[in-house]
Amino acid sequence: MTYDPANIFAKILKGELPCHKVHEDENALVMMDIFPQSKGHTLLIPKAASRNLLDADPATLSSVMPLVQRVARAVKAATNADGVRLAQFNEAPAGQTVFHLHFHIIPVYDGVALGA
Ligand code: 5GP
Image (cartoon, rainbow, N blue to C red; front, side, top):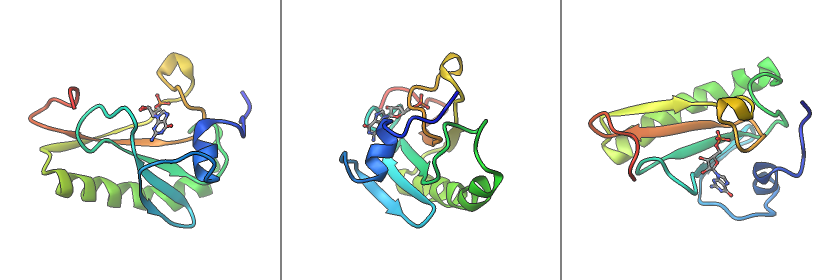
């Protein structure tokens, strides 16, 4: 499987499509999910061009995982959620719909993540 540079998240990273951005640094962009699974569902998108975890450069993962932790902590604090689910899907049969590596940070309220 190859990386398609015309995917939606690549366009958002280039500023060609809008998003509700909550953070950006040299390694990643963090934005609100357009179809949230719960209140505060956030996406972290590494800037490096990878289709998903399977083809990602380990250096990319090293650079963004501390931010994943920071975002998870911040989302939990901001939403007063009871927990936070980290989700990440690789290829369509596994549930991936946008083929640029990304991490879901999903607040969970009393064990229920669905139903924003
Ligand atoms: P996947 O199943 O690929 O892991 O999830 C892709 C996620 O991206 C979904 O939760 C979907 O709601 C979200 N999404 C798809 N298109 C857009 C968009 O244009 N903007 C934002 N903010 N989220 C999107």
